[in-house]
Amino acid sequence: MFRPIITLLMFCCISLNVHAQVITLKDNHPDKHVVVKGDTLWGISAKFLNDPWQWPNVWKLNREQIKNPHLIYPGDVVFLDTSSGIPQLRLLRETVNLQPGVVVEPLDKAAISTIQLNVIAPFLNQPLVIEKDQLANSPRIIANQDNRVVLSPGTRIYINKIAEGEPLNWYVYRPGENLVDPDTKKVLGIEATYLGDTKITKYGEPASADITKAKEEIFTKDRLVPTDNTVVTNFVPHAPESAIAGRIIKIYGGVAEAGPQSIVSISRGAADGVEVGHVLAINRYGRVIKDPEYQKDKDAKNAESTTGLKPGYVKLPDERIGLLMVFRVFQNVSYALVMQASQPVNTLDAVSTP
Image (cartoon, rainbow, N blue to C red; front, side):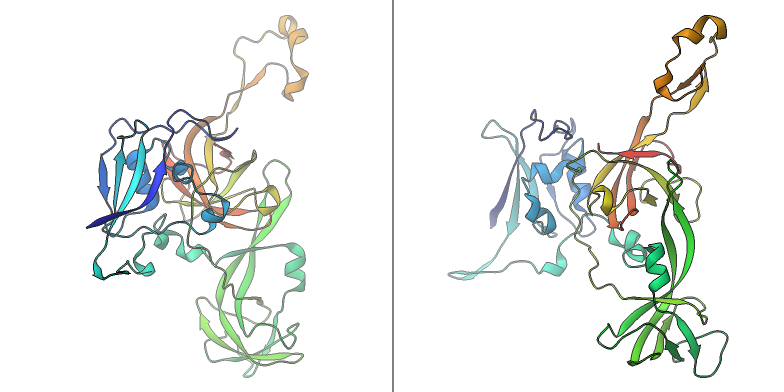
């Protein structure tokens, strides 16, 4: 039999906060959807909602539930209920009663994810973005036992600046590209290339360690950072509660333009209020053009000095072209996955609270 376990109220004409849009059903929405392996919460929500990122509001999740949302499993049925006069989404789960008071429930490991995790897996703990002061203070490989040029798994290495009591396991990385805010020209962080793993065998100054994994060539002078055991994989898309505005500063995957399922970095991070799960609109940054009918003598007196543009020039409005979801946040930079795109997404395109 099926047992209703979650009731989700949807008020189709209510604005949820100053930044939220009205929640509306798709014209061609199904009456129900049977969850299958490979489904994602975003994909299921997109079957019912015009704006699938609003599903936490539809499901009435509070801030604590956003951190630990309800789990949905293959075999569950999501259906639309209009019997009360107010559209409601309900979730049914098939259960088997073995004896009074005992109910079989699906295992947590079978629950579907919000997005396809395999797409973002390499970015969940590597690469990483580090601050300038963090780079200056991070431990460094200063030598190896056999005086090798290229260090491989099994090589004994010696590291400075690691005191007793610090973690045993460390990532090896190499400082790479500066990530720069295109508007302020400020360096937001340094993107580091992940090289491999190492494990401390003896504390001291220097500490002794063995390289346990090498994804790329490792050299003396490469740096270390503690392994990250706080990787977030349970994402709940939700709009920021405050206005956030930034730019796309890098596209990954060796492509010039991004589309759905592409990974990008944006020029805003924890210091700006960005959180894991935040959904931001992608806007094509309006070009500045010369007014073809501008007449210097006639129009100069009417020029708006507040625009910051030279007389005779006009900035075209930004145009919304897609959505992205943040999945990893650093101090001033965040990694995000493009969820929707009606046009190719480029670096310098604007991102903002939808």
